[in-house]
Image (cartoon, rainbow, N blue to C red; front, side):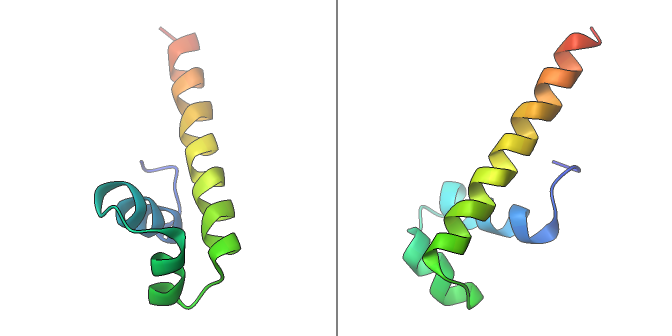
Length: 58
């Protein structure tokens, strides 16, 4: 999780843990729903990349 930006962490927390929609998160963070979805996608991709890199080193 250390590879994520504070905004990415906040969005993932609100979306995944909190169960909020992209529209709800967008309103809360003063962003567009599209920006929320893109930021979430990039955060998840960054986590996948990091997990893949960790798997290669073991």
